[in-house]
Length: 163
Image (cartoon, rainbow, N blue to C red; front, side, top):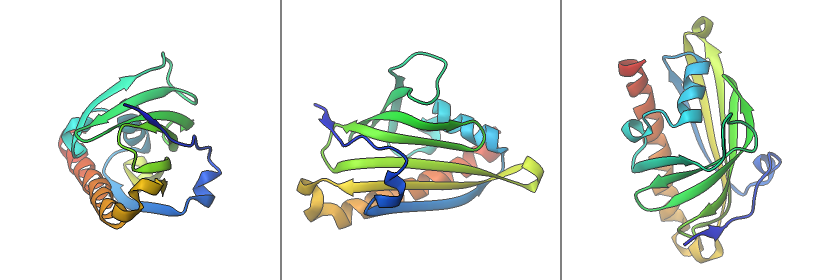
């Protein structure tokens, strides 16, 4: 069963009441790191609890494209707001199967380091918890903060091994 969330635009970045932040260095070009996120490339190998990525819009993918990301405990519907290859990708979570958020947006920025041989990944998750989730928000925040942190570290390791 799907629970619709409030669709976001990029202005939500400045007004979201909560944010999870991860900043890390990945030994790959910004274009490569962008492509990994844009295609969900081997996401099952670096994102904890990832099960599947299903595009719900046709190619070419870009602003306005939609997909579903299935995790072990929940599935989300994503809609892309920013699609700047090698620089930035931003998407709104427009629906979720477990009603823990009322609004959410992920904003990923890819900054070139070492003459393009490495990337500074700035990965922010902006969100508003659903009213029914407020009692568990501190615990849920800790779980999801750890999940995104582990995903970033796993991605950095995966890229070293798999390019």
